[in-house]
Length: 268
View 1 (cartoon, rainbow, N blue to C red):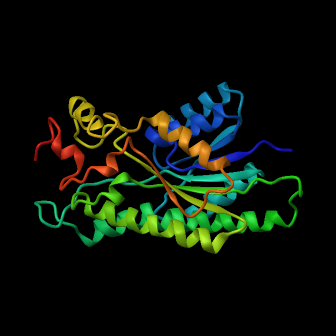
View 2 (cartoon, one colour):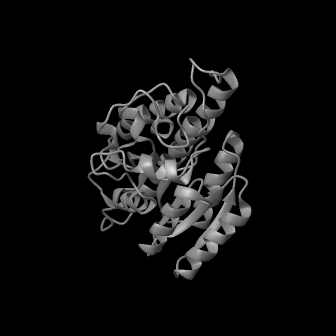
């Protein structure tokens, strides 16, 4: 029986990298997708191999449908027991309708392509792959493959900042339920929504620390929290069509601005 494998998009750096490493620590082989960060992707591969697991890096431009398809088929050829897809890659750029940086058609299209179209295209490919595999599946194997869509706690606590990003992730949130219905029983589709987890944009370290504490638990999510939640969801056969918020309760505190604008160094 081949070891279970996972494809993590955007896994060369930041949260995607932490998710990839946690899967490896829990015994999974890992396909590392990257766009431009080849050196970081190869470093991540080396670290995973140091944990005794298989890993390989795959480059793809997620704005191009042909490259998305080529990515998936290359990964499936290399890792025949592909059991999980984590759509972590995304773009996060500021715009707001009522600001000096209003939304443009290009900004919206860019966010929709990377944050929405690419994850759904990969999910469709994963479904087709799992449906074909089901015909050859051993009856003793009760696991159900999964797709995990990285979302954001702000989707349940909306504010007008980062408009294009928010719209793209809101549509992806809706797709979790739709695709879970459409792709059952061969594939589970779940959402995973972090809180403020890593420094973003021009946020200062001090500003990030203050923002991280603005939750009912007085701390938001860490990369380890998100990575462990992803591994849990990949093995939770009864969970599909829903979203897990891992944010220290941040979504329970309404805000008219994105939290980074309410902290030291980001008071615009």
